[in-house]
Amino acid sequence: MAVGGAKLALLLIHILSVAGDEYSSSQDNDHGGDDHEHRKKLISSLKSGFVIGYVFSSVSVITIFMSYCVPWASLMKRKGNEVMMKTPMMTSLMERQEMKRKEANVQICMLGNIVKRLNFVGISKATANFSQAKKIGLGRMGTMYMATLPDGRFLAVKRIVDSQQFEEQIVSELKTLGTLKHKNLLSLFGFCVESNIRLLVYKYMSNGNLFDWIHSVKHRRKTLQWPLRLKVAVGVARGLARLHHGGRGQVVHLNISSKCILLDKNFEPKLSNFGKAMLAVHDEFCEMALVKEDVHGFGVVLLELITGMDCSRMNFSSNSILNEWIDQRPTMLQVYEDIKAITKRCEVVDDSEIQMQPEICPATSQD
Image (tube, rainbow, N blue to C red; front, top):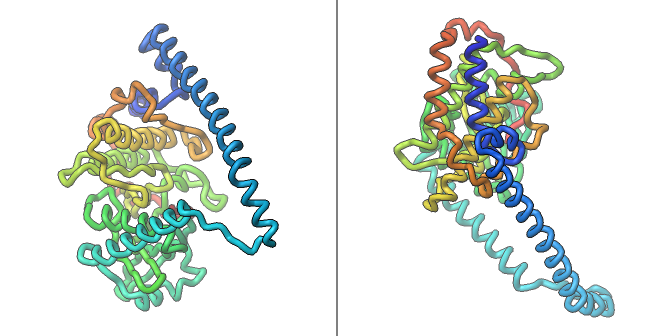
């Protein structure tokens, strides 16, 4: 397995070495001193420009505040603070937000033709009325519950905590997972929209998320063997390659981490948390930057798989928009082919052996 680890490490360097200033030392050897000096000058000029801009904008804000806001504050004080100011800008912003929410709500209703619409009463019954005993995860968007259908099948139900705030994320999940089907993408079973209730229902993943397997789960440690790590790496790469190079347009995930990679009973990885996903725009440079952001995210996951480090506590900013070497980062199709070749050389164990691994509790942290 040492050979496979070495090859994965080389691939990891290829993915992450162009990720930004954090990896500048590896770039120095490839591009020489002149290129390094050019980068230093570029970074210095950017920093100088930022400082100058910051000072200028701060002075401007203070000047505007003193000339405009202070007199109005005095006036309001004289009137006993009975007058509440509602500027045209605030009104316009609120109107735009309300319009976005309404548009998202219309889209959710229309997506009922693509994704199965479920009944709230039925889901509530399957989760024992969303009891604490059925709670399996807590994330930014809401709480995850395990549901048991009458036929014995298990589902995972995400109950959105604030439907108005997350309408756009709900639409994104429905559009992507509702239309894209792949063995390495989480299966969306259906959704429920009733009054202010928003539920997303997925196929239940009995082995939780990758983060919990690499690190600790409720003070227990589970060892993810090297063959399984390779299986997960090639599966995630395959799923991302499907998103980036699929026939129905290029989809970017934009939220890749070990916490959004779920594992089924056979340790087949499934990409989840598509709340930030979007179709790549048609601007060539911006499209490339978004796609390579996913590649960078996969590189961080690969680093976590190889080293066991908790990369969620580290600052891995790819700086993709400002990075002049972004063209050199490989595509996910290239990464998938490379990792697939490594797994063949390492003779990864088959699924029958993998199924003997003990299952753990489902994900404890969801987005």
